[in-house]
Image (tube, rainbow, N blue to C red; front, side, top):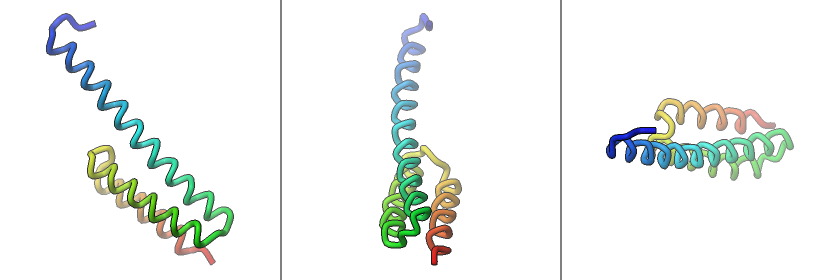
Length: 87
């Protein structure tokens, strides 16, 4: 454990930020799973609505610095490509 007051504060701040990032990442993963579930069920309408929600969640995460913008774009692109491939 740190002895210096500023180091103690950094530990608390880092933990708070890590918890926030974990929560946001978890939400993104859930949104992606919903899209993949709709794709596997071959439900184009549900996949499209889930894709819209997932895209929003991914871009919000990128805006907050949880994901790099290129990572976010790659995730959105792959999801959109999977939905568009549906018959």
